[in-house]
Amino acid sequence: MTSRIVSRFVFLLVVALGGVAQNDTSAAGKDYSFTVPATPSWTDTGIDLASGDLAQVSGGTVACEGNSDKSKLPMPSAPLGSLLAKVHTDAAPVLATPNAEISASDSSHLYLGINGLSCNGSVEAKVHVGPAKAGASAANQTQAERLKSQLGEAAQIFMQGQFGLGGNNATGANNAVSGSAPSITTLKVSDTALDSTLRKDIDGLPRRVNDQFKNLGDMVNFVLVGSESQVKAALDAANWHIADTSDTNAVLSALSETYENKDYLTMPMSTLYLFGRKQDYGYEMAEPIAMVASRHHFRLWKAPFTWNGTTVWVGAGTHDIGFAKDKRNGSVTHKIDPQVDGERTNIGQSLDTAGKIKSMTYYLPPNPVQGAKNATGDGYSSDGRLLVMFLK
Image: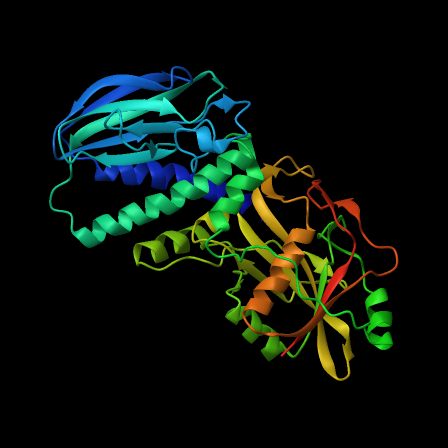
């Protein structure tokens, strides 16, 4: 992912999350500011809500330690250290980082708190209270809520990856994509040795891809054997989506499609090189909108050889789990899960679950990659094997 896409994403979050909330606010109402300490667990705002009132709450995150047991948190599903809100002392809390809207169905009282047990510092929170906006159609309200919810999820992942907020980055990212990616299990691989000709050709493959500056990056970690039409049909059946090739209108497309009750699933992918040329295809899998921050993805190149007259494809797959500083130029880029074998397994399992695998096997080539850094400077590790998959 290029720094330009990330910059657009940050702009999108600031404008859309702030702007949508502002546009939904009626002219009548009151604004409040609070400093919410990490302890005690709940702060009484002193705000009484009448039936029909709409409370709009926004705030950041604090640093927390020693909360490995998430089941003990006020809201186990929310990021560690995030701002929470509730309208009764015994009510279920609502995540308010980066923002939330709470409609009061009866007379109630607003409380703010932190999702943590051993946290430090405080969160600056903003609250706007007013009557729910009249005259908006149910469809428009649903679309706006849907957009804000999806952007809010992506924003949480962004803050976790870029600023180290909200606890374990990998955990937050995995939660964001759990609706699309299958749960990882042991693959059903064949023990039959690869054909000697195919082994020889795979042995001659480059072990890693590179960027436009010849910086070595992601490792080659899987091979597909099948025609172009078989590859496309298999990946489509497995719920993989072809990435956009240009980021010019990516953010606008995401907003437009979400407002039209569609899901934007084709966030642009940066260009990498193998065999001296850019990828033939880029595929990705993730939840709508949150894909900007967290996604399963891979790049695919047609190999310069065939096997028994069938096209061979070479792939490099990684799992984006947030954002980090690009060590080449100091800009912001995607951070990958350093345990890259997990994405190799995810790709194989998704195709197998879709019923598109004839057989698959692991193959350890000479001089395997078992520890390296990608082109942006992040380290990763692997057992060095390639997953070779024969498509139906």
